[in-house]
Each structure stands twice: as C-alpha cells, then as structure tokens.
Length: 46
Image (cartoon, rainbow, N blue to C red; front, top):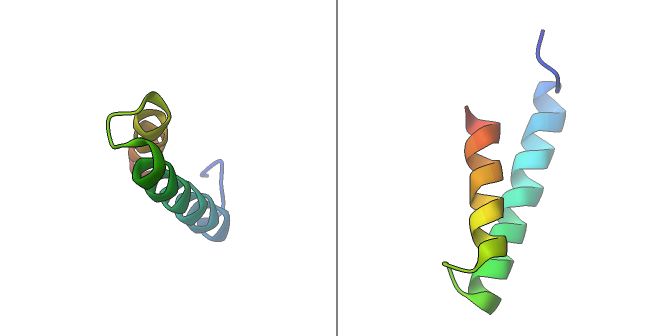
C-alpha cells in the first residue's frame, strides 16, 4: 500500500510543481530552492 493515496499524491505533485515554477521564474532555474523542489517532484514521480 502506498504511503499517500492517489488524490493526496496528485495534490502534493501539483502544489510542488506550481511552487517550483514560481520559484524558478523568480529566482532562476539553478537556484537551490528550485532544484530542491525539482528533486521533490522526481521523488513523487518515482
């Protein structure tokens, strides 16, 4: 059984994706916060 239900996983994915886009636009794609959010997205997808 997964730690997160499908709905919760989708919600967390969307929240993280939007946050990453926002941080990336404001601070740049190589900013450490952008990279951390990108890594979190990778973890959610795997």
